[in-house]
Image (cartoon, rainbow, N blue to C red; front, side, top):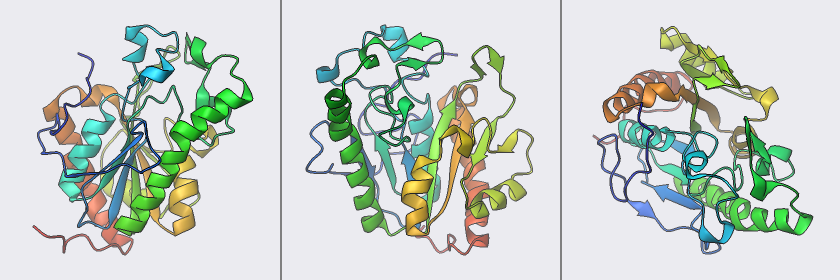
Length: 274
């Protein structure tokens, strides 16, 4: 499988026109966030690990080009999938535009792995031994504008549900993973349970390969739950996202399950504009 590369501006690998882009927050000089589209579906899609970009001020963190293109730096295929799913649902999408190795936006600032010194078997020299002011500088430059942009997106979209889109590597720490699509939830399992009840497919599993105990539900806890939104994370094994056609197929399968599941949970979807 060839590694997926960042999507050229203005279009999606998966064959869907990229929705109209919204301007970033005024206090976001790095361009940490990007909001695309404006509905009409009452669902906000989120892609925290969409990019492997390393802005020049941070350098390479001492990593090789191969490392910076691998799954440790971003979720391969996740942005392509999120854009394809946004097209299927006619929903807005907010995504991060810097590598999670600079700051993992699905972690709280005080979590050790928010700025990971080691990812799987790879040391990250530029994240080792950071002083408190250096860590705070990352929080100010990356985490703070993301939080502001998420709040702005919630205010603008007024969604009834939030769906966070991720991918995971088929082998981690030498162990193969059999899960194909993980449906991850925190305390509120309503939407996840509705999706799993309708999936009818082997390999769709609850809270795998990660779950709340692994600290991966930060966005659900801090954004969706305080606003009373239905929520879940979708984790797709990245070997299922090996081509544009494959990505479209996964997006279609997810949409076919998400639409009736959202409706079963009280979110009207079928009256969306054609």
